[in-house]
Amino acid sequence: QVQLVESGGGLVQAGGSLRLSCAASGRTFSSYAMGWFRQAPGKEREFAAAISRSGGSTYYADSVKGRFTISRDNAKNTVYLQMNSLKPEDTAVYYCASRSISGPVTTTLSDYNYWGQGTQVTVSS
Image 1 (cartoon, rainbow, N blue to C red):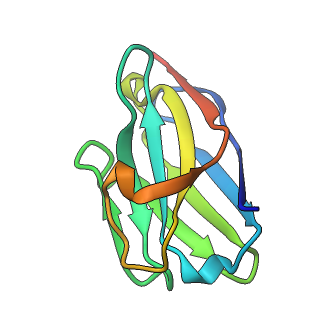
Image 2 (image 1 turned 90 degrees about the vertical axis):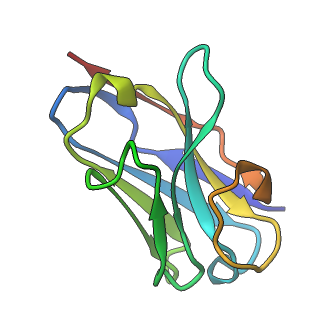
């Protein structure tokens, strides 16, 4: 059974930083691309960042490019999202997700079938 558990969310002032972590279990972590998605109140869940199985390829939404960095440690079965220069519009529940098949990294929400419970990030102005 695949489990994804996020941590690291919280309340931060605009311009601050947070680091999210997602610990995975239940299958061979290094065989699957991983992604971070977010959902703000009243809005649909949207793509934020994704990383390939090896960590050699990363992708970002335009809204976070240059401020967020996704990384993974396959030895620790963990994926991270370093968030810098946070803005109030980054306020959302952040979800870690894993592809269901051992394929290339994608930015498409429907390609990810395993999800964590989410962690709240609130950025005050």
